[in-house]
Amino acid sequence: MEIIKVAIADDHKIFRKGVILSLRPYTNIKFIFEAENGEELLNGIKDNKPDVILTDLRMPGKDGIEATKTISKLYPEIKVLVLSMYEDERFVFHLMENGANGYLLKSAEPTEIRRAIMEVHEKGYYLSHFVNRILLKKSHARQKIVPSLNNEITLSDKEKDVLRFICMEFTASEIARKMEISPRTVEAIKDRLMERFGSKNTAGLVFFAVKNNLIE
Image 1: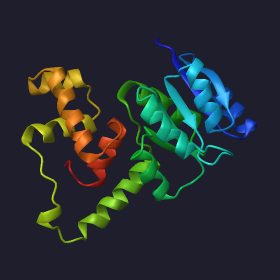
Image 2: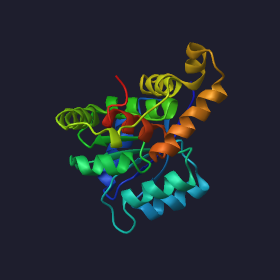
Image 3: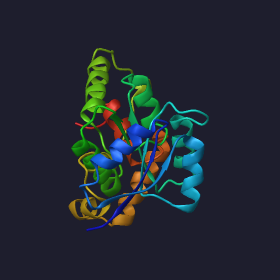
Image 4: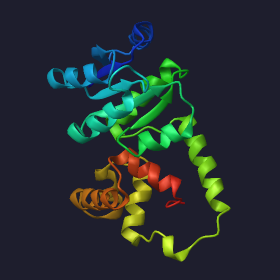
């Protein structure tokens, strides 16, 4: 089984140790370093590149928001899972649209944290029940708004299919087989959509698609 290297950043040592201890039974998850703030986290990445990062938002010095943005820019291959006490949807929207691959509340069970780590590593994103509730609420709110043709987002049939399959958690190879095109073409379409929507990663693309009702 592949070992997933994980780093955790939180200014509360007891919480950090608690998360590490709670995930110890899962032998495919290995914590390689801890950090008390965003600056320590970025310094640690230079010498020990993790596959996945668990980070709090509120930390002294460089906080988790700025650290996430920096990591997304400098190390796009590293997946960032926000682990926060904040249930404010504004944090979720901001983080998911600026590089985070998932957003979990600190009340999450170890089994969900483990599942989130596995999914962001394998698929590039994880939408928790908390995030899904926010997206559903946003979707219902949008349905009450009279649509405007000037603001309508138009996609080609191929773009719609690729986006739908991405949101259904299929890999590029699986999408290519279903659509009878090459994986490189799938990646090119995905990259084009990400650039068009200003998404930093697959998680941001899925988040944008769901939030704006681009998939059925």
